Image (cartoon, rainbow, N blue to C red):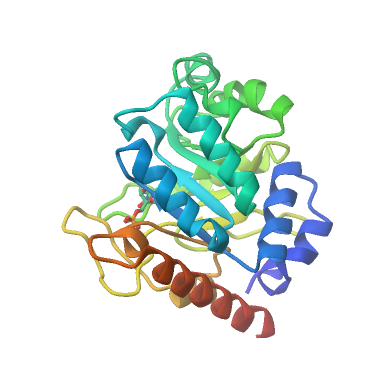
Length: 264
Ligand code: 5BU
């Protein structure tokens, strides 16, 4: 077991050198939530309604802003207001994957201006370290944080072995901006390192979605794989589900698993 796995989120926050990671861990501790909602809906109305319902239970709202048909600046303003009302951070799951100069503009410009509102975003290591340098130029002055994609949840993903190890090395060299990983298991940490491990592909009722997604339970993710945060989408807002009841259920499951882990 890694050293940070046994520490509380609060203990880790107190000594974390990365400002965005520190804020994230503090929020998880005070709100008693390691649940992130992956809100993949395609209308502004649904996005805002579900975010308002689930807000009290989550520490992080994960968006795919480019799938919203009626996106406008008002959506961003309302989303930011909800993040203040319910005290959650925002993570645009943009998965940048181009050269430094291009991602810099994709992050800061265009109609979405992601860096202006999203606390956290993420990137693939495929293009090499320039992708971090480019994103950092825009994000670091704004106090933003970056996650690298170390491992994906989908069947047949190519993110393993040497690819994942090299991604981790890139993160190590950029700890001022890289705050953690999207991963299926906690990454081996060196002493004095603390990367937040966030894991998508979480569900309590089904094991897949017929399109390659693979689900594990909060217990598998938090206790067995030693990740810090569960990212749950359709398990909460899928067809016929009581959104609020499901959010509460996943928050509890994630927190119970975390308490079991730090007691070990
Ligand atoms: P779901 O409805 O719980 O399956 O949604 C999972 C979300 O996490 C969805 O927004 C994906 O884009 C995202 N995701 C993922 O499922 N697997 C990964 O490896 C990565 C992101 Br990276």
